[in-house]
Image 1 (cartoon, rainbow, N blue to C red):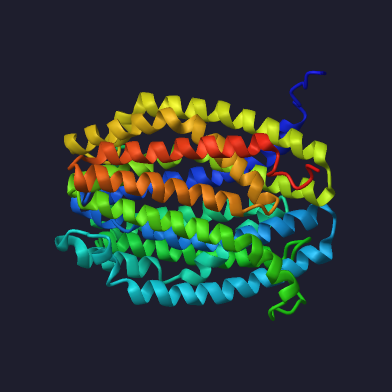
Image 2 (cartoon, rainbow, N blue to C red):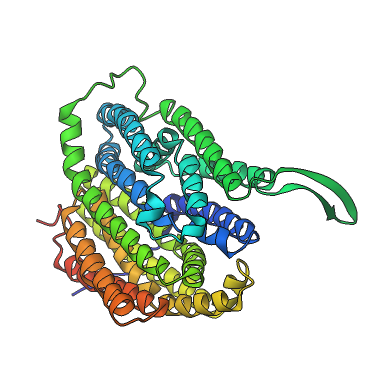
Length: 457
């Protein structure tokens, strides 16, 4: 049997799609780092108030992203097949989806903002602050929905640079407004010169307002870019429901939505159990999650490329290209995650010190980060295989895998360890790692079977 050689020629194609997404996520993470550090300077209570509802944000964002996956699948296939008219039809229905879902989630998040801190078992001393932060942050749900779904549609058409540029703009707006809104007017020194920096002194509320304005700016800009795109622009098309388009999108999106909703609800339950461990554990968990997110950037950047390329190959009915892209992307992903995991392991304490001066928080956060660093290459494999399956519209099996891992391993295990056995944050993160390793095993078995590929006759 002839041994396959590594297809070096595919690397430019893969990285041309992956690097804008990586840069976009890097900018988002950098600003998230700055946000956490700036809010953290106000005290552990402020860090806990901001971080206590982070998983609710994942729940909302992932549910909306799941709808975007339905459009990604079919726009990528139409783009790969050169069917511009069909791609535009799907884009017009993306506009309808943004309007309906954006309004619905605005009503839900604002209406429930007062109850969320209680559900998350937030300490009573910071519940009011947490509720105010949550309410302001989710006021611009319509532009946030546009950013997610239109960004996904543009990536499906191999345009990853536009969402990247919009993401950079949002983060710059957020950063500037953070400096103006969080702190009071103060005197700063720079290169030997002193000057007065104006500020509103709004603290946690100011951080929420800055993010809300940034989301609004991003939503408006990406809508304009989407509307004027040369291939998938919905201009001139009706945005009334077109069920010939919506039905296949929903068939792909619904399992992915249930998966993301179920796993995000699991994150909520997971965070609630950690919040019950006390302020130190909540702060350490929040900061560790922030730190960890930067080291997943290569994985999720490559996942975007994997999903788009798999969809394009399916649209062109090119089985050989599908297989080669899968093989090369997986190999590159593993190598990148080995490097990122190694760096996380080595510099975990230093990363924690960027966000907290508490020795307890630093030590606890560094311990769990070093644990998860070892599992990163395995999790990276799962990310890529899942991305390829999303690109070809195979979303049922990932739903089963993720729900089983989240609720059967992470949540049950964390409940037993923390609530019944009285163990702490380290045990909860051990359950999280066990969940990730189970996903690795399930995805690899499925990938090796070949059932993920619709062209595999």
